[in-house]
Length: 266
Ligand code: ADP
Image 1 (cartoon, rainbow, N blue to C red):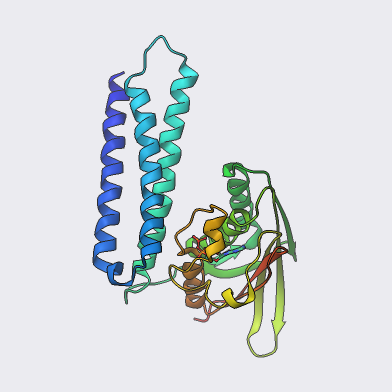
Image 2 (cartoon, rainbow, N blue to C red; image 1 turned 45 degrees about the horizontal axis):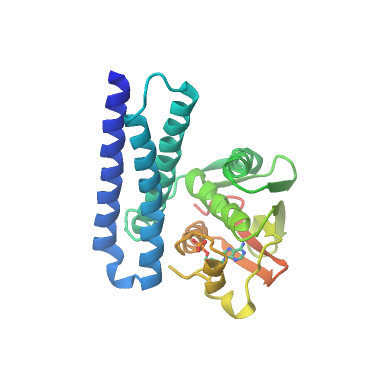
């Protein structure tokens, strides 16, 4: 129980450190750019995992040794999940402020598209609370490109996340990866992520890549978010010298198409 008590203390310190970190970043960087919607969203995003972790932690502190061990494991798992959620959020906010620094650099390496996609698909399928079906079609099977591993994974992860989030009920997602031989740009890798979700009205499509922008219906559908995902995606695709576009029809679904050079520029 000594170890357990120590782990609770560490957990509380971690949560507090995350909270301080976020407050510092927001105060220094984006305060003047923040819209009230964003403030509400991000506050909610941060408060929820902290509150859930606290509640689970409380339950652990009051844990009676005679109680079922599986119950204890459940609380520990909840703490773990909420910390992961917080750290994902922090990572994204950090990379947003990092991107503006002159010292920002990509670390390109040769990546197999299939190897990157496989664990992402598994994670998204497992963590989702609703049924998710993700089909993948990569041609050729060993399709590869030169890109930054972390940011390339985050780009794909954000698009899969949205495809699931904005699909009410069951999510049907298709990921189609192809090599294209473009006359001027040389060899490109195209990744198209399609869903059959709520779609995006034509007049909203040009705004969705803006920082903090959220289509109002997103809130109506009670979908959580803070309007940074697509801004991050577009910024990072741009850093890679690539492009992103969207085709969408309200009520039918959306397809996001990312095109990246197969080889790094330099
Ligand atoms: P967030 O999802 O956190 O709100 P994003 O920057 O990822 O922020 O997306 C901006 C907005 O674009 C979303 O709020 C949503 O309205 C819309 N959107 C993004 N992806 C999809 C999608 N696959 N289907 C429908 N709407 C989407």
